[in-house]
Image (cartoon, rainbow, N blue to C red; front, side):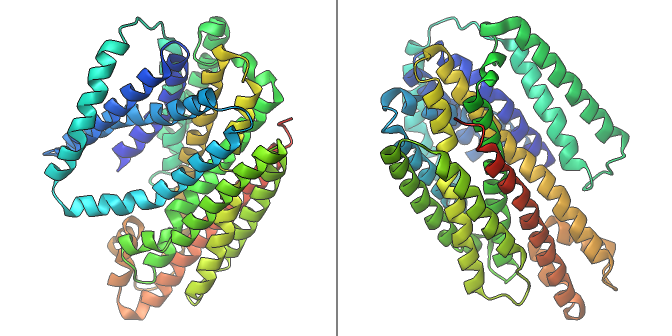
Length: 435
């Protein structure tokens, strides 16, 4: 699992690369290329005979996935008008919300089948993608390789110690401190290099002089912190009631539906009104209310309360989920050379927000749970570690302490929802930057 965390951070750092590639090569060719890479990695994962091969497949799939969202966002900007774009972004946000919930359920179904059936579904489209790109991408791409490596390094070196701190290692641990210092060094080196490269770099820094660009990046960063925490920690509330992992995914349907409907309605309204600011401001406030209400839950709360609070949270997130992209693409609509890179930067900050959110929330959750379990008499160290690793281990505790362990787990999850209120408020503040 630790290796997979490193891979997700590596994937975030690649997005700036694809923003540059989209400005130099046909968008359709790039999209088919990244689909082909993603499916090749997925195919390798499907037939993996060992964990090492599975991780190798995950690396390949991660490279493709890092380019998929950037390519789709850029193509939407290319084929729609400014008036049409909010509607399509709303549809994309709805699909993204649905996929985040339904994807694990489909994966569980495929997992119960055989890897050969998964491989047979991937092979035909993979062959078409790679065959097309063998002909379409015979062009020498001049990329900012040094800037790309520095961006990957600074992201990875920052997120790994954030994930470790207070969880597997102390914040005062020399490894944690060393990696944080190295991430700062890489960040400074990245800024200096991009200043030197200018327009040839993967991130022209002059774009951040525009309020819409800076504000959209902030908003995208904070919104994805909140969205990923909701998607990751809401199922815990149901698993602690004895629901299976698959059923807990089904229990998130109210969250998915409310977010989907809100994304579609906000997209249509922005297309009519011509201004996304009200939705960027109101959405975080509604979502903060939902997170605050989720914090009040305990082991005696009814399922109806959980569903109701999910609906409120989903509406707040759905209203603003993809509207930051509408703002930045409107800003660079007439600047073809910068549109793809502006799209990749906002997507990068959204992905970075998700990674930072999971890392920080994971440290908060583990610290809270460890603290609460340590105060329960009769809980052995091995049982404590099992509870930290798997929520289902709660039900393996003796009946005499199970209720206390369950309460400790629920209150630790509640703390994560309380933490997510802060990014929601910061989102509301950051919406003042876009013009």
